[in-house]
Image (cartoon, rainbow, N blue to C red; front, side, top):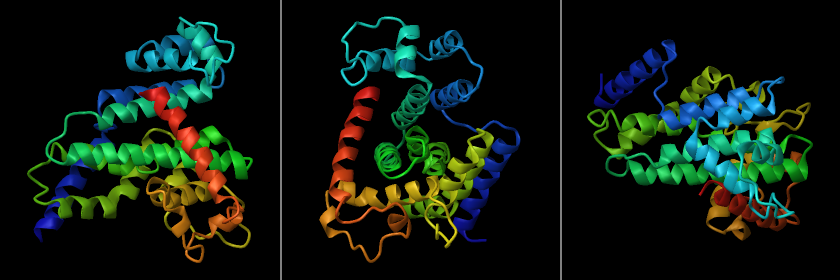
Length: 285
């Protein structure tokens, strides 16, 4: 067995053990916010219960209060000082996405050895960009939930987050960056799928996260979250590098055509995404 195969085996053995024991090792911040998100999804939950749940996470509480007093949400300018009023203003969907954004930001800010810190920060920022793109695409070109599309974008690389986070504790296994990223490229989709299943994420988000890279819509396919995430993921490199003018429209995924995204409207999509991304960053920074 080669050294790289030995590394993969040791890492995957540890992951399988964690998954079987239902003890996925994520930092407390992300685990807590995923529990909050799950609780907020209950159909019969009251606003008082939601307020109590948010109050268990200090960073999330602060972000919710801050956002509720921002000009984007608080158009009347009336000062909001309690979580109940803030929750009532923002709504459950917005708070669910704020929760996961805050958790992923805290995950990216953990102390990592060597170059892992910069890699986690880059991964977190990419997830936010794809989330903003997905939200705007869903809102402009579909009847799908924009909040759900944002969540799918946030989670689309969750397998990479997990591997990088755990790699910090397996430094002896990863002799080079190439070994680490070969493992990430090969296993992040499968590991991400297992994580989303453990978190009981809805099937349409699960499918979009797992299959957006290989998605080839057939003639009877109806537009879904997978198309939104496929396009958002593809556009990210052009968005961050401001190189949309260089986009080769002959090579774009088929989902572009299904969503009616073309050279005539792409600039407007990019501008709206910049605005949305600025709002998201303001909410969690």
